[in-house]
Length: 82
Image (cartoon, rainbow, N blue to C red; front, side, top):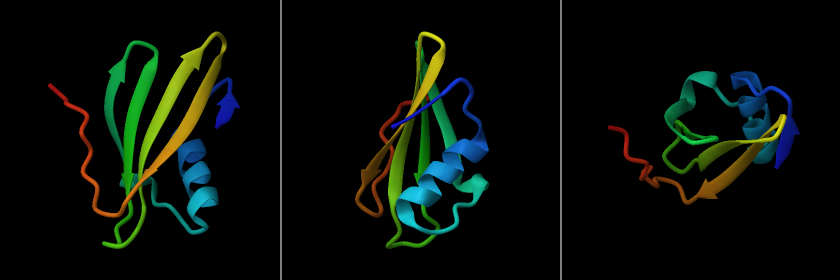
């Protein structure tokens, strides 16, 4: 979990890169939905056996909290976008 006053794409890519130990292309991070004070994004490695993450950004008071939830390779996102 990362707590910041502002979270940008580079912060998300940096957190993912630190977690998986390799470079993360910003274009691999997909915005999915906003739900109240929560923003959902999805990262899927370009490699078939690579990691998949649900990136959840939540606003609590003055801070943004970034959580990375890892899923098995090939997992499809289940967030409905209308």
